[in-house]
Amino acid sequence: MTTTTSAPLLAAEGITVRFGGLTALDDVGLAVAPGTVVGLIGPNGAGKTTLFNVVSGIVRPQRGAVSWKGRRLQRHRPHHLADLGIARTLQGLNLFPGLSALDNVMVGADRLARGGALAMLTGLGRYHSDERRLRERAMAALEEFGAADAARAMPGTLPFGVQKRVALARAVVAEPELLLLDEPASGLSGEDIAALGEAIRSFGARMGVLLVEHHMDLVMDVCDHIVVLNFGEVIATGTPAEIQADPVVAQAYLGAAEEEGEHG
Amino acid sequence: MVSLRNHESTGQGEQPRRASAPSAADRWRALPALVRFPLAAAAAFAAVLALTFVTGPTGDLRIGSVGYYMLAIAGLQLLIGYSGQISLGHGAFMFLGAYTMALLVLHQPALPLWLNMLITVVLSCAAGVLVGAATARLHGPYLAGATLALAVGLPSVTVRFPELLGGSNGLAFSTRGAPPALAGVITNTQWQAAAVWLTTLIGLVVLATISAGRLGRRMRALRDDESAAGLAGVPVGRTKVIAFVISAGAGGLAGACQAYLLGTATPSSFTVTLSLSLLAALVLGGLGSMWGAFFGAVALVYVEVWGEDLAHALSLDSNVANNLPIVFFGVLLILVILVWPQGLHGMLRSLAGLVRRGR
Ligand SMILES: Nc1ncnc2c1ncn2[C@@H]1O[C@H](COP(=O)(O)OP(=O)(O)OP(=O)(O)O)[C@@H](O)[C@H]1O
Ligand SMILES: [Mg+2]
Image (cartoon, rainbow over the protein chains, first blue to last red):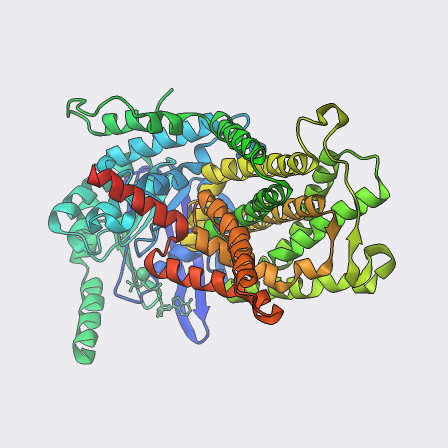
């Protein structure tokens, strides 16, 4: 591993996932230490999103185990992630179209609330102070991403770049210890990608980040460590410099490009 | 207190605070739900009570009907408009509530009205837990189908247990009217309409509080995108069941109010038509806002009244006359939704917007 010596936050070992005859992941392992940004790259269909789904409890692996802070995650479901301290953005935008940008982020902030079920149902107790707290935190998160002006707007009325920022704000507003980002740069312009890179590096100081991304400049720029998948197998791991110099990686991307060229 | 407006001005950062002081509407919205909704309900109650002093007994009955329909539709709003689950069988919970009320009045006449209402809510919520848990894995049309089956099937239990439930004639009973101390001040029908509205408004305060807070936001989130909601920490399955249970409670309470107001509970009042009418009224009133329930309930009661009046005036034969209100309602529904997909609530909002821009 790279520079850090601390125990990993997240560790996946020997993950194997089959969809019918297709082996989407074959004995895949990786680890994310606190305060590091780990890149997970590979051609289309390599199994990156599937690995995220395993970590999120959406897909159960046939073999292998995921552990969080040294404890094995067994029957965890997606909605347990937030309480564990894991946040994830989806490959698409997946904002809630019927909620204002602020409300979208407030959904992400929900775990910061202190009131219980009774408060939610009756308006008594912490109901009002929770609403205020969540709104303040959500607003602060929107400000951090330069999207405060969009707070009252519906997502559909916002430019794509702003929507992406709202989605990021929703993911980090509850201060997760690990952030899973699935292709955050897709569809963004150069300027927005630069801002995103800065944001990811700033996350890296506060939390562990696992980044799936096709945009190589961004990956090489922000990652401390990179894992390369191809056809569900780990074909290389190392620092950005090592990965860039690895002929196997170049071969995998070249092969994928050639295949695409043949089909397209 | 920190208002939304304050957040916005901090959000604008270095810009000078050009925006004027918070408007009355903003300040109102910044009040805690625990203050805001009960205040609004108290004002509504005063208005309704005042209205009953100018209407006769028939008018009181209609005002009361608007009340309990509004409660049922508001419960459906939470389920459909907020949590995105479709129920075609909410009449079944009204049925349950009405018969609970009737049986309590007949067999436990000493119990006070408020306790009967409370028992009804508890029972209908329990039924909601059963149905909600059983249907938790059903989505969209499957849930709609399952609830429809419930609405079709449930009223026939009255025929299975004729001694207890009165068969197809149902149960008739009389309730205590206005307390003797108020005799001469308000009439019995006024008292009944007021009791129904008080119950309705308490129910609405609870529904509005829930929908304006964390639970309502969780529901809207899972309605829009279940997987993103789950990843944001919303317990999707549980939240859906909670929405179902709350709306079942509202439906049951509405049924109890109906039985109390009319002094009867008959299976023919709770056919599938009722369930579909509630749904149609909700869509007509406007999905996604509690105001929609009010407009929907007014339309549901008064379109029927006007339809009957018209049939009377034209002296149509009973076959046509019976169906005229439904035709009326259908035409109104189609016309409104074509122009304003957000229903009557959306219509009024866009009209208000036009007026504001015109000034
Ligand atoms: N639920 C599923 N059922 C069947 N096959 C699946 C499922 N999910 C993924 N796959 C398959 O598994 C393989 C890996 O898919 P995955 O989405 O993990 O790729 P990816 O690396 O995220 O690709 P991309 O870069 O295009 O997002 C693909 O061949 C895909 O078709
Ligand atoms: Mg993917």
